[in-house]
Image (cartoon, rainbow, N blue to C red; front, side, top):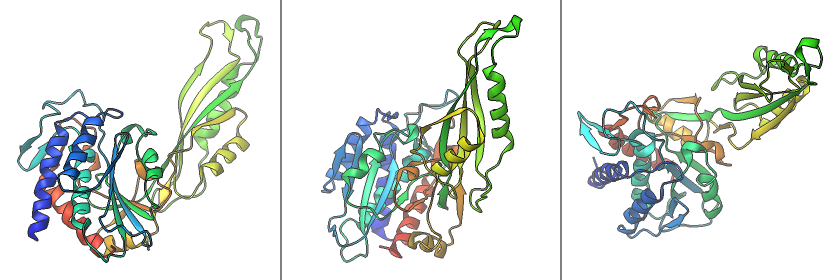
Length: 356
């Protein structure tokens, strides 16, 4: 192993321990942002902080070249109540580094930062390289990558660090939440008055239950529509409800735009349909993109991810890939293998050597 890469690996593990020891719940990442700024500053790397987001450009940034973004998040969820270890005390046992955010996505974050350091002073490459540690990913907040992108130079493609066992997530489902309202007419239940909004809603709910969108993705399978909430405004047992509200959770594959789905739903139901948000769109990166081809050449497999990440907020091709295992995310006594971080750094560098 190259001695310089070994040092990068060791420094990455030590940085992750410091990040674990510092609470960084979504919207409260100011301390870990400070740690990342200090880490860069002590290595004489110019960097910028916007809110709780930190980014840096490679030393010889050239506007005439395309730009690759290396991005992961430094916020965490709150610890699972079933923790048996202190979530803020980084402990190494049997090659595992325990601690909140170690797997999701601290290991990815410090690995990509190590990779950025590896390329920071290199000249003559085909791509610029930017590193960005962003906030609010766990709550899909507007103060994270979405807030950071306008401050960056034009980005042509990205690697998004999430725990994928260093396999390539080339597509993600989009999340579209629909707020639906069925209207009836109030009346006294005993006198069989009014028009029951629940019954009108049930007809539409049955449509959502039985209908499947036609386009089936080879990566993500069919899109899914699930009614998850239903309620009326009145609580009296003897009043026929005039309004019934329900919520539809839709997970859309990369073959549909949200506008297509919204239009199709509205054409087939009688209720009012309002999208709560259209930010978290389905995404995909072409299988012949240089990043994917480089990963394939290294024996990496590709798949469609059922989970949503900051990839959904990027208006350019992005590959989700990182050390760790998604199955460990948000679990009690979260951990990442130290070897996963070391191997992840080496693999990232081998991949990017073919591209940048």
